[in-house]
Image (cartoon, rainbow, N blue to C red; front, top):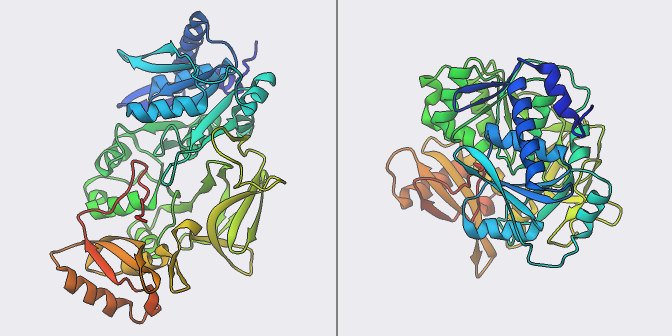
Length: 453
């Protein structure tokens, strides 16, 4: 009898092929299939009904992945929660209207029924999925401004987009987290082709480099912030990274100066730009070249247009809606206003140049932090920088920067060096007027810069 979740059937066919590497242990597709069935039995014995909203409080592990597919088979709405902060967990439980939560005990997940504190009737979006007998997925926005938005995906529809892929033996490190659309995309895409995912115990450069060498990882998806840290660490000299065929980057704008450094240090590795949003899923793109940030959308499930410099998307796999926020970022006819600002070329390519909420307005002149950062990263004095706007009584805002110096330098010297270097490369209003020396720029656990406002 075929499973509701078609991927589970494909795991039987892949049998002894390597599916997961976790804590240096190797698990085959047969191992994964057996563990999924183990959790299917636990779900049944626990009395978790189809349509229930079930949270998994964990990042990626072998057990968490098995539980994920077991819940998909049971047609549940799955809510991955990786935080360990009680208040954040409680907020996510409330926003997603969670009925059950699974946490680990002695290496295995145990479910606990919750009493939802709210109306007995679920949100309309959840009720629609339940009536259609489909599994769902709730993901949260990063929450850098305001309360994180809980967005509901039709998980069956997401998974259907991975059907019919040609099988390929490839080992991909799963860098993005269990509660991130890019992490979910990596897992589903690799399992759909019978590949291997390697799960890091931490996302620090040392651990990532060790895993690449030990397990001959072929694909490293990551963020520009992480890749810069990797280069600064010098670990590419300590570890053998020659198994890498592809370095994929996304989640935030890539400084062109960093891309060129990567191209020089890893000349035999393909650098792939990735793009997607939590609302629309990961999107297939094609880069103009290895040293270009211009890309084309190459996805049959997607429409796109540029309105006043902002990218708008309409995807067949986009969210049903937000459970705890208005749908003002969507138009009435279904277009999602991404907030990403783009530059377009005559031959149809686009380049992400920043976020509209990060624009610095200096006396009416617009400044993109990514443009200034790319120039500053060319300087020999600094290993990392982060640009942001600060209030200014005269111009409204001014350009500020935090810099990580390679050697000792005082603020006055740093300011002189920046003005001297940027004089012929940036308009005067784009040159930072306030410089702060820091040991490390501010980024979150997803290795994505968090700009001060």
